[in-house]
Image 1 (cartoon, rainbow, N blue to C red):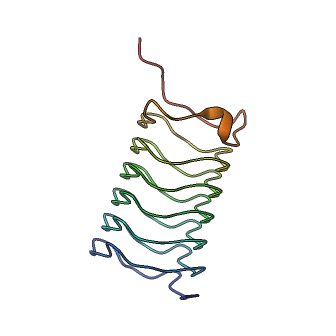
Image 2: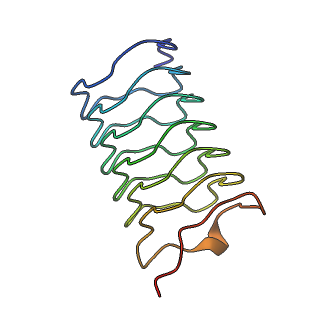
Image 3: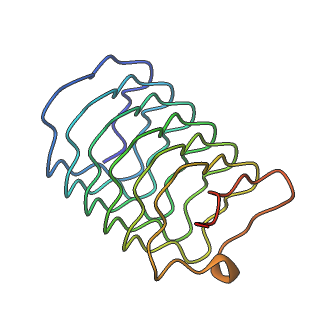
Length: 137
């Protein structure tokens, strides 16, 4: 609990199943890291580089992912309830089955992201700067 790992380079590591509560991973490099089933409840990941990471079924409730690079991230089945994703880069991310109730997506870039059939925009915070995937023709 409360781990201070901000600015660390943990890129490409297998951290699946790790449990950190209320820790600080601000601006950490987690590019390509396997965080499947990780429990990162209320963790500060502001500005972190998670590009291409695997967060399959991860618990990110109340996590701060503001301005984080989540491009191409596997967030299938992840718990993002109450997470701060303001200004996050989610281009090409897979959010199929992710729980996003009360997540803050204001200013987030979701172009080319896969949202899945159950994604409910009414349950998230967004604004005119939020960029959504194009609807299929």
